[in-house]
Amino acid sequence: MKITDARVIVTSPSRNFVTLKITTDEGVTGLGDATLNGRELAVASYLTEHVVPLLLNRDPHRIEDTWQFLYRSAYWRRGPVTMAAIAAVDMALWDIKGKVAGLPVYQLLGGASRNSLRTYGHASGRDLPELFDSIRQHLDEGYTAMRVQTSVPGLKAVYGVAAQHQSTGERYDYEPAGRGAQPAEEDWDTAAYLRHVPTVFEAVRNEFGAELPLLHDGHHRMTPIQAARLGKSLEPYDLFWLEDCTPAENQDAFRLVRQHTTTPLAVGEVFNTVFDFQTLIREQLIDYVRAASTHFGGISPLRKVMDYAAQYQIKSGFHGPTDVSPVGLAAQTHLGLAIHNFGIQEYMEHSDKTNTVFEQSMTFTDGNLHPGDAPGLGVELNEEAAASFPYQRAYLPFNRLADGTVHDW
Ligand code: GCO
Ligand code: MG
Image (tube, rainbow, N blue to C red; front, side, top):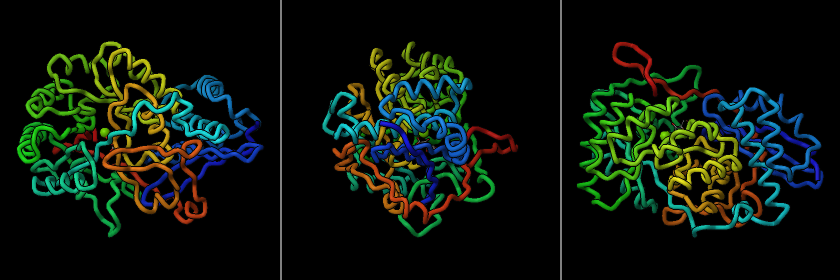
């Protein structure tokens, strides 16, 4: 079998997605997700200009060989653009292999280790009543675990609070990247945040009881010692995890956080390779691997990092916001079903428009995802629908402190 065609499709149903479609001489097609929120066209161009010409005439069954060839022959390794491009190829080849075998990808990865994947939903509110409503709504939708984000008194807009960004009449589709020529500017005050967050978790525990698993995303905004303080102050509320409490470019920072708190830690949504996790896993500084198949080079390397993590009882918590396309989500859902050390899967439902463009066999029942049993990844692209939603420039917001200093968002 040979690859005879590879094409990049950029579409914007509610938000931008970059998809690679590979076709073989036998007419089998495979899809891969290459979406990099706010920098989509860089990956589209990397693929179209530099990768697609290398794919033609290759044997689509040689997934590992193609991965190693793209990673090593570029010489310039790693980085989100390169790794999202390689991820798209990797996913598309797994999709093709599954279709040729007549099996869903999770069967090729060793078969199911569980019935389905527990997810967590995104509850948020500008104040406690709004937050409680959001938690109740997610419980009604079947979610059994909840990420909790709230506004901070005195700040105008804070990452992860849905109501702030609602501008259209359609069903809410959480997407912080706003369409337009410039990124939105938000404000930030770490001291106010550190004072406020524990009071919110205390209120949520009092209202919803001890059993509901609660998560929180610090979104890289604290220094290590601030992160340590937050982890410690949240211990009474028994979090499932505290995510991205401090940026992990400096993996050593997690030693400092870890020595001060028993709140479980999750990190890695912006990581691209196993090397970003090396110290964190080997020294058992984290509890959950947050990588997304899309930004980590695909299913193949994500499988490897999870096997490495398994030696240290570290589990998966793959990144699943709406900027991971239904193809990327399917890829990591197949993997999550197959690995033994699955932890939880982040899940935000895609918009109705997105679900028209990406036809999916995935199911979401009682808070649990299953990738379905269609051969391959179980996602097909409706190209006509995709073409009706052309790309629109969009940027993620950024933060400034009160004195005007740019701060991590
Ligand atoms: C999460 C993430 C996202 C990111 C987004 C950026 O935990 O789901 O932090 O919300 O901000 O993926 O594109
Ligand atoms: Mg996050």
